[in-house]
Image (cartoon, rainbow over all chains, first blue to last red; front, side, top):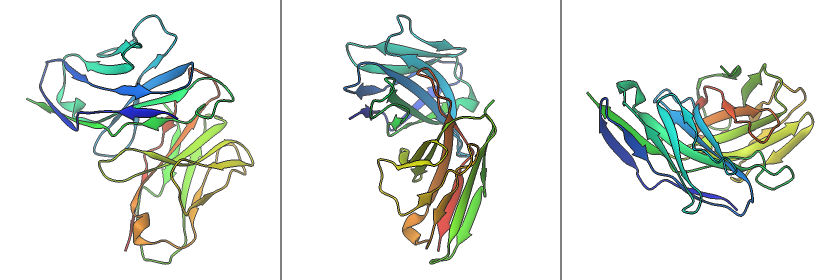
Amino acid sequence: AQKITQTQPGMFVQEKEAVTLDCTYDTSDPSYGLFWYKQPSSGEMIFLIYQGSYDQQNATEGRYSLNFQKARKSANLVISASQLGDSAMYFCAMRGLHAGGTSYGKLTFGQGTILTVHP
Amino acid sequence: EADIYQTPRYLVIGTGKKITLECSQTMGHDKMYWYQQDPGMELHLIHYSYGVNSTEKGDLSSESTVSRIRTEHFPLTLESARPSHTSQYLCASMRTGSWETQYFGPGTRLLVL
C-alpha cells in the first residue's frame, strides 16, 4: 500500500519569494515515482515535475524544484520567485514503477495544499 | 501539451437520470483512468483501463461503470444518478513506461439535484 501525506492545508507567500510545499510518503515498492500537480480554481490538473526514486539528482523544471530526501521519505516542492498565477491547490502523488506491481500505473494522491500568493 | 478531452464540462441533472461522461484522448495512450474529487479534497481512483476491453475498479468504490471499446475513448456511466454522486470527475491517460506521467482532462463537474 502507498500513502502520501501533505500536512499543510494552506500556505501563504509574498510575490517573488520562494515557498516550500511539504510531502511525505510511505510505500513498499522498491522503485517508485513522485509527482507534483497544480490544480487552479478551474479544476484541471497540471503536471509540474517528476522524481524517480532511483534518480541521483533532484528534479528541476523552470521555477519548480523537488527536494527529494529518500531516507526521510520526503519529496517537497520548492517554487522560486512566486507569481500571482501560482495561487492554486498543489497535490503530491506517487506510483510504483515496477511493471506487474499492484501500484504500477496507479497514482496515489495526497490531500493537497492551497497556496495563496499575495502581491 | 496533452490532448485529452472531457464532455460535458458541467452537468446539472435530476435524481434517477442516466448519465454518461465522455473522455477521449488523441495521444494513443494505452492506459486511462477516472478519478472522483470532492471540492477541496484529494483525488480518488474509481476506474482504470490498461487497454481495449480491459477495465478494473479503483481504490474507491463507485456505482459507476466504464467501457473501453476503442483505445481513445473511455466513457463513464451512471445508470441512476443520486445527490451523493455530486462531485468532479477527472479523466487521465498515460503511455506505458516507468517514467511516464498521467495527463488529465479538464474535468466534469456534476451536480445531481
